[in-house]
Structures are given as C-alpha cells and as structure tokens.
Amino acid sequence: MKVASPLRPGSPARRGALVIMALICAVMMIPGTARADNPIVQTIYTADPAPLVHNGRVYLYTGHDEDGSTYFTMKEWRVWSSADMVNWTDHGSPMSVATFSWASADAWAGQTVYRNGRFYWYVPVKDRASGQMAIGVGVSDSPTGPFTDAIGHPLVRNGEIDPTVFIDDDGQAYLYWGNPNLWYVRLNADMISYSGSPTRIPLTTAGFGTRTGDANRPTLYEEGPWVFKRNGLYYNVFAAKCCSEFIGYSTAPGPTGPWTYRGTVMPTQGSSFTNHPGVIDFNGGSYFFYHNGALPGGGGFTRSVAVEKFSYNADGTIPTMTMTTTGAPQVGTLNPYVRQEAETIAWESGVETEPSSEGGMNVGWIENGDYVKVKGVAFGSGATSFAARVASAASGGRIELHLDSVNGSLVGTCTVPGTGGWQTWTTVTCSVNGATGTHDLYLKYTGGSGYLFNVNWWQFTGGTGDGGDTGGNLLANGDMESGTTGWGTFGGTLSSVTGSAHGGSRALSITGRTASWNGITQDVTAKLTNGKSYTTSVWVRSQSGTPSAKATLAVTADGTTNYIQLTPATVVNTGGWTKLTGTATVSWSGTLTGATFYVETASGTDGFTIDDASFQ
Ligand code: FUB
Image (cartoon, rainbow, N blue to C red; front, side, top):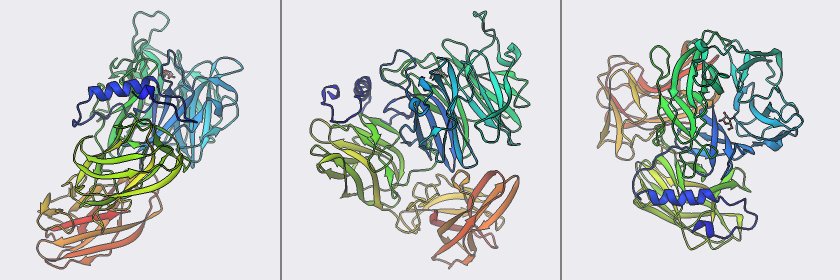
C-alpha cells in the first residue's frame, strides 16, 4: 500500500489521508469508464475559490486545507490555471502566512485582481499583535507570483474576513468583506490604500433575505462576498445562512447598493458546512466556482474546489445550480505538440506535485499504476513520437500512453531510467502509433515498488506538420479532424467533409453563402493579447468558381468592430489547395468584448473548403 511506502529523503510530509482516499477512489472507479472532472484538484484539498481571467487563461486562487484538519487549518494559498476549464496546471504556493511578517495563522478566503500590470491578492489572515483577523494585500507582476506583502501591515483590521475587490468601469475600486457584518471601502488607484472609512452595508432582509432561528443574524448574509457587475447591474454572490451554508445573491443599481435579495445560486449540498462563491465570464461562457467535501475523506475542513458552467437568465438573474461531478465542458482542445506541464491535470490517481528544480512544479510521488488524465488532446493526423522530462533517484519505470481510459488503447511506452536524483532531469523519447484525432490522454506510470520517478513536462511530435494543431495554435481543432468542433459560420452552412482533406481525413466546407463575408468562424476573444503580432496559415480549396479567400479577424472593443486582414487576398486555384499566410499586429482600444477569426472571400458567394488552419 502507498501508505507503507518509505519516505523519500527530503520529501514533504506524506499525504497520509489523501493516499488512502486515492486508493479508495481507485477501487471505486471502474477502469475504462470516463472520469468526472469535479473537484478540479485531487492532489490536495482546496477551498475558497477565486477565479481571475487574464490573457486567455483562467487563474484560480484557492486556500489549502491541510490533510486531516479538524479546523480551518490553512497555512498557504495556491494557484492553478487553465485555458480550457478542464485541464488545470498547478502553479504551487506563491503566497503563505509567512509572506506577511505581521500574521500568525489562517490563510483564509481571498481574491486576486489585476490592475496596471500588477496582481493584487487580498486575503484574510490572523494579525499576531491583536489576535484578530485582518485583511492583507499581496502583490506580484505575475498571476502565478511569487507575491510579496504590498504594505507590510494590514490594509484593514476589524476582526472580519473574506475580502472581494471590484473595479468599476470608472476606475473606482471597492473592497468588500465581512462576517458577521458586510463592509466596503473605496480603494485608491494604487490598490493598497483607501479613502474614507470602512462603511457597514445595512444588512436588511430586503437586501439579503430573511434568516430564521438566529436572533443575532436576521438576514441570510453570512460571509464570502463576491461582487461584480454585468450589463450595468451589480451582483453580490455570498455564502448564506450558517450552518450548513448555501450560496445566495443580491443585486443593486450601484456598487454601494441598495441591495435586493434575489435568491439561491446553489443550495446546501456537498458534505462541507461552508461554501464559497467565485463567478467569471470566460471564452463566451459563465462559470460558477464553489467548494464542497467531495474528495474521499472530504468534509468541512477538508474541502475541494469545483466549477459549473451556467447561463444567466434573460432578465439577468442567476439560475440555481446543483453540484455535479461532471464539471464544466472543455473549451477547445489541448495541443500535445507544444510543451505541456506534467502537472496539467484533468484528473489523477495517486500522484502529488512539488516544486521542480527546473522551475514550476513537477509530478512526483509516482507509484506503480498511478496516472494523470489530460482531457481532449488534439492529435490531429497523428503523433509519431513522445518526449518527457523525467528524474528518478530509484530505477525509474515506464510512462504508458493510453487513449480514452487508463487501460485504453496503448499508443506508446517510454522507458524512464534512474537518473541519480529526484531532481536530476533527463529527456526520454519513444515512438507513438495510433494517436490521431482528439482523445483523453492517460499517462499511466508503471514499474516496480516504491516511488518510481518524477515528470516535469511532456510533448508529442508529428501531427499535421503544416498548419493544423501544431506549435501554439490558438485555434481549437485547427486541423479539423474533430469535425465542426470549435467552428461556426457567419451565414451559410458548415459541414465536416471527408475524402478531400488537405491533411488527415477531414476538412470543413461552407455552402449556401449569400454574401462574400459569409465564412467559417472561430471565437478567439479570450485568446488575444493586445498589440501582439500573429501569424496565420490556412489551406483553402474552392468547391466551385474561383472565390478569393482571405482570413480576417473581427475585433470588437468598446462597441466598435474593426476588421484586421490576417492574410493577403489570394486567388484559390480551382480544384486544388492554396495556402493563405500572413502576419498581422492585432490591437484594439478599450475593453475587448469579441474577436472572431474567419475565412471569407473578397467577392462572390461560391462555397469553399478549408483545412489545417493555424493562428499563433
Ligand atoms: O476557509 C476559511 C473560511 O471558511 C473562509 O474564509 C470562509 O469563507 C469559509 O469558507
């Protein structure tokens, strides 16, 4: 059993309860069946989610419940990120109680916001001098840290917890926090000081609902406010009624109220007597983060963060959601032809992570049969080889590459040697056969007894080789081997076609065009960086006539749409394929609300076919 395995020299404290849980979990799972993706993180217990969208990724800031906790024993905060809402990269712990020299304990629920090139992480933590909870601010130039104490003392200290920060369209930032009260204060533009005094928001039953059975707390508001604005309406989503908590929300016409209670976002569920909200919009969808006790051994002090996708009702109200083990659907696919961190995980069994001597984190504590699942990997026309960065102070083992389940089709096996140290890294390679199209990838680690080896990163080579899903392509399903997934149209009818592909076996055709701007589209709003230069490549084949195809980017910011030509207009040779290429700088002023990559024609309405599109 894992629990009986010897500790490696210099290893962090053993995972104890989590190991047992992983075993129970593995026993409960039927090999070969699709695995749920909630909770998001299985390597440790996480709590108090605070998501932030930045440059096409979701950064998720959480607390960390220590194994076997019988109180909110939390020493550090953790960061995770994802570009697709299902595969989450572990960035470790860039901030802890020790970051704040004046703090003694309790790394509780915070939120990170971005302003003027810096990331500000507001957290409740215990002030050593007073013994009271206070709000500290960490700051970093990177979303993944490291974070330092921005001011060297508490920003506010009134014994209350759970800060959320909201920056209004006019640039005014507000800090809200509180349990049992609800406070706000206007932050200055430096984000680390404030003007005026903290103000108590009136907790009226009209504003925050009616609680029964607790004379001291007549309203439902308990803690964990999450304030944001959508379509001119201000939302405060919060943990309601103790205990157990549910998630409720209120809305207001302005950032300071008056608030009106609107109902339940998520009822009491999930084996944890607390819950905690985080709400974002990402890549055209809306997402609700929360926590529960869903991992084996989970409960009120051993919590796990999970996520659901949702749509606002037409009147702006939030639907009531229940916890699922399925989680959010994947946004696009994962590109195996660029370096992927071994700690990018949709689901795992048996492994842990730790800081790597090569930077970032690595997967470790690997024993025979452990695995990491990476969801929706777009192999396109076929991978030919696999490389992994590995280290082993023992005698290594094997990385087996299985598709769609832990014992699914085996497409490659890499042998890992002993390297003389758990952080003595070497790169191993092996050939790959049968990895085409899009699949869940299971990296199954096998070998003898005890800990086998560590993995820092991996990467496949091969693929379509020209356009398609290679080298950092921002387009999902760029090789079109996954049918119409990720693609749409401006007018006309889209279909996935076989028998005439440029690479692989599938391409996309548009028919029924009634205007030259009708074309094949993909939303790339969440993927663009302002001012960046992008190179585009797409193969086009006419079905009939001689349409002059071109790739265009429609960029909408502050209500204005600009059309950026990505490739020069090129006459497509009838009956053959023509490659359109170009490099263009993509920039906009104001707030980006939409960006669509599309292939249209300079004139005419004839149908056409495209394949192997790349935008990077
Ligand atoms: O995680 C510690 C505390 O539990 C948080 O600050 C509260 O929101 C509750 O989730």
